[in-house]
Length: 311
Image 1 (spheres, rainbow, N blue to C red):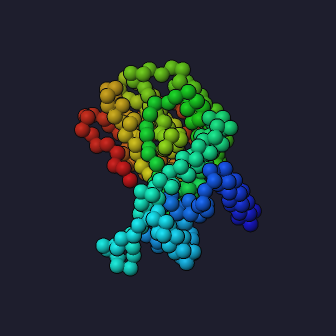
Image 2 (image 1 turned 90 degrees about the vertical axis):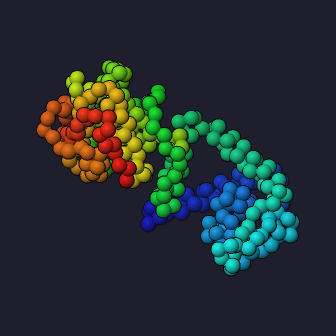
Image 3 (image 1 turned 45 degrees about the horizontal axis):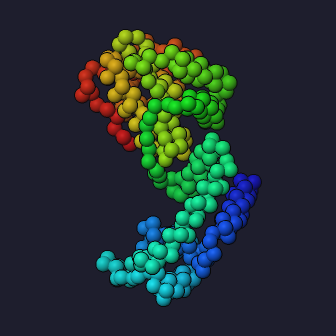
């Protein structure tokens, strides 16, 4: 009940917030619902009345009256569907696009003004939280453009922070693991040999959702450490992309073998490593402590060795 009430409280807050934002738009003859319908049509998210009703959770009778009004004002056009004779395909006319454009520009400007009152890090936190809500409640479908890049200022601190929080929740690891992660990442940041060692973070639409490091063990062997993907984007192939980057770099650097440091409890990570050709080993590995005690390895003899198969 407490969690359900929290969701309802947010719904009430956000409905009021949207209403306030709408009131700040230039004076218009369109209601908020009508603006939402225009947005669905102009963005291509819906092209039939049925799709509009489904996407916006609208009563079909109410929607039909709005669409009839749009048609009378020459804002939309209809044409028969070639695949379903029961449906008409809807699209905005030039007049409709001209009516919608200033409303959309004003809405974007209003949100930008609201975001400007937040610090950049708060803006990123807000965007990440909104995307997580969409993902969790929207069927957990893949969203956004995924980019793998080198760390920037603040990214190493983020990795320590999120690694500790997530594994504390998922595995019960506490301050000892936080100290291990901070020491490993801090040591890497201070002593990295760019020719033989590297780190990456993964962004989804500009929000950091994962990372990994590759460190030298000796002249012929390297190790992947602290590979991590946020829970809400797991299953999208991001972990595989990180391992791909690690393996490509290790080959270019001339290593003959690559390890990955795992914990016995991390079954998803173990399956990822297994698909990439890694297997458990008792051979040389990066000195560690605490929960990260298991090392998997694979050979990197040639540039034609198989890369990760994305799930």
